[in-house]
Length: 333
Image (cartoon, rainbow, N blue to C red):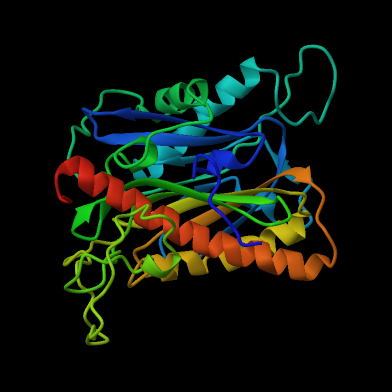
């Protein structure tokens, strides 16, 4: 049996997972929340030279908390880290979180790691008065969480740019013959190009499923100069880029196994974007395990298979997000 895309071809094909999104058209920014129904094992890997993250130290080996209540991805650069406050407010209302002291009057603390991308220079009115809008967007995204969600100019990818094209939010999934599902969601604001120079083919084309990002292929005689970056951003500024992502699986991973999958998933960035992991990129990927399916033996081989699928599915999600955003902006036929 071969792998197949999930029913929705979204990260929410992973059972026990929902996604919520919110954006502000005036500010040209947004927030995406990945919400497991129950606390999930989590890990994070960062490869970009200019990351912006929150609560990732909690995911390190030996930390007291080994599960999270949600993951957020946000526009807004460091301002966007405030999106976690809105997500935490929603989780507190739902009675979710980690309880260090269990007694009346002491609420549990929701564990919400996340990452941001830099869309402050991508247009929109960023002259907000008082508190930045990200906490409110985070709360709105939490409330909107469901099994389906919009791709392209939506959520944290609403104000993104991918090289010289509109960026956006993309997602994809794959189901293994054993019934394990791996899904990915990416918000793409990269410096590098997702397209092969001089073509309409995405770097991720070898991994495409059923024409999900247009079906374009490079010409048979395709060749390029090693320093030809195609439609990368011509004049990047420090910190003005980033692709942030979340991979999820229903396989019951340990924290150490989730960390290995996160490390392997990073190669999905390099399969879909060129160049990537630059000094001014903040590329980061989270991994969530909803623990619904016991991990079959032998464990190391199964973790390897899941990690490889995490990488290829993430590459598909990146290309799909930009393809959807290009179509919405009229840049793709």
